[in-house]
Picture 1: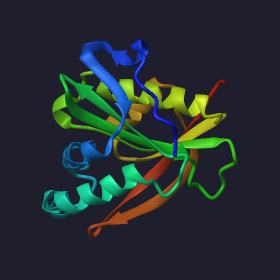
Picture 2: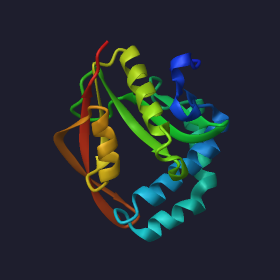
Picture 3: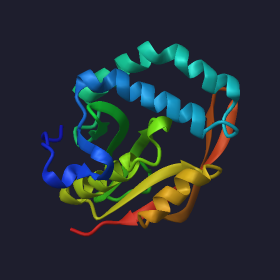
Picture 4: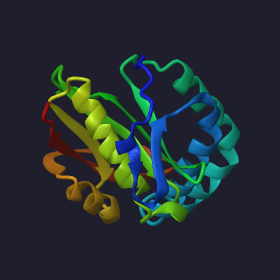
Length: 190
């Protein structure tokens, strides 16, 4: 498991956003942000019924997230949260790449979600900057992430950080719907 990184002054982002390691007690708020982000960002990409039903599963998802934060399946995984005025408004999970063609020094942003009410507050940018720094500090030479091809908002966000597509794609299927995911990569400097 990653050692705890206490926030340093650089972790305080504009807009009063604080990025820190996630704690087990953050699981419910992380899950709420994750579900609401899916419901808003993926409307029109994934089936409405599936997105609407995500709210029915909050308790179960929160329990799974608690277990994952307490004892991740992969010890090099880290979970970060963005706080604003003491409330968790975003979450990011990262660690080694899960791609079949990954090399040993390739990290991955596994997930990044910000509650829609906190979009455009710099919470997402603060999470991404902290994750890139952590991946670099952990010795990764490059990172990857997957995003729905149709999610132009997220793609613009990643591209502002220098992420670029590499031509890889895969079909994502869930809830009776399917969407194409594309892979982005970012070289890291250490």
